[in-house]
Amino acid sequence: MTKNERRELDIARTLAAGNHLNMAARTIAIVHRSARSVKTQAAAIALIGELDLTNRVTMFNGCLAHVDDAPAVRS
Image (cartoon, rainbow, N blue to C red; front, side, top):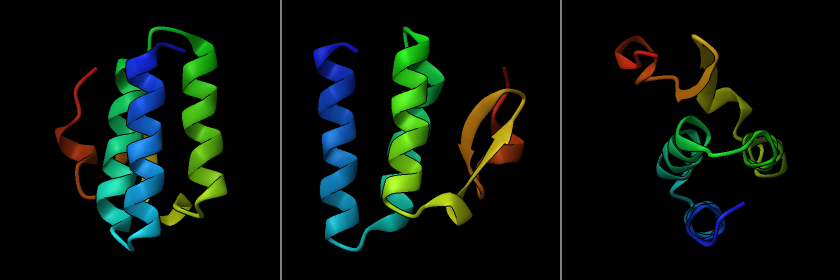
């Protein structure tokens, strides 16, 4: 995982702690879609579970996407 990917996941944790759950879910989804490795994708999915954001994201065309953004995501 790169420093930038780790920083973005930390930002998502901070957003979730501040009760900005939709923004946290979107941030994690962006990290998952742009991840450079499978380990980073796994870390993003694990963070979704850790922060209990599973109802705010979905897998769409093999990419993690916020439920409101899923139709717009193109792989």
